[in-house]
Length: 111
Length: 115
View 1 (cartoon, helix red, strand yellow):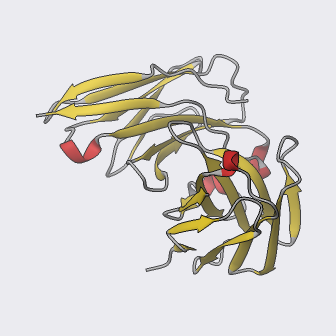
View 2: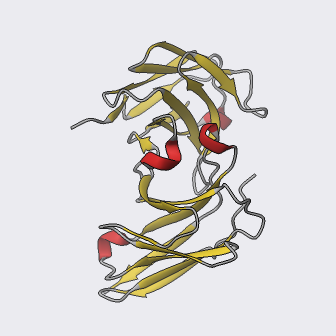
């Protein structure tokens, strides 16, 4: 079972930052947090992942709380093409563990 | 570009008629996964190959089988498709030591319709 909880849907205005929350209160010390997104009828796309430090790449930033029980994915300037389902995933099982998807958050970016 | 390719993009099969979906990769990743995604649901892991080692999820029906003849190819066989097996089937790959190198790479999926 997925170890994460996300709101089912969120709206964001185009050009504004989108902040997507995720709760993972049962995360263990060596388990990473991954974020993927899935645009309609396409395969999921990797966005970012982290363990305990905040991470940033060309797509997004990942903020993980100090107790690691929650995280936030930040899309700094959302565009209409960012409309998708965003999945927060805690990878269990170490380096051979699998990604088990939860229900995700449907982000709608509006003009 | 290195990628994960799934063929066909759309597949229609008859109820009870065996069907095979294919996945190929040019990434030379040693792990390959098959996920099933039904309408408006999250992807559900069916099984994966770690090199040649097959790993089945506990709740994957026996109707679903997989073959991996070499590093580049992996097949999903549905022996007797039912109406409930209509879904998007997603193939993904990853390197060993996933956490240091990043996430899975997914194909575009094969949408299976059972008639």
